[in-house]
Image (cartoon, helix red, strand yellow):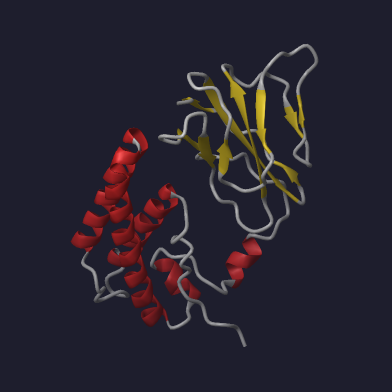
Length: 232
């Protein structure tokens, strides 16, 4: 007998843009299917206001730094708490049906179709949605992140100082970086295999471009487009 599906709460610890995307998907899924989700415990107007407050405070924090962090933290808590409320509601309506869970905009646990689709058969696609920012009040430190691929993936990231990545640079299936002969470039590699990367010991005032490569058992992705930022 197949196991029942529930709404995944994988948005709780997700990156900032993923939380926002999840909320938008839930808003569309629930409120655009009123014949299925007849009486949500949160109105569409209130949930839309939560999303807008989150988006505005997120952008203010990313552009302004730690002074905007308390407002963003509060807005994130409100939004995530309300997604939780809607997830509980959807679980009650779906009664274990993965298709209804996904109709509401959530990922479903124990989803046979989803598990099959995520089987690793090819090397990863080139990473997208790379973010890169300074850490306020921590001179010489910067943090980068890329999209989440799922289980069985490793993340390689590196910086190029005061330059773009030269043509001909290669990353193999083990994450080793090869620089063409005769090319002079300062590359800083983050040796952790986690998606979120902390770079320390950088030069304040220098410009850095960050790049990502994702690895799985089938090989390495292409190198992502660079994301530039000056180190504080």
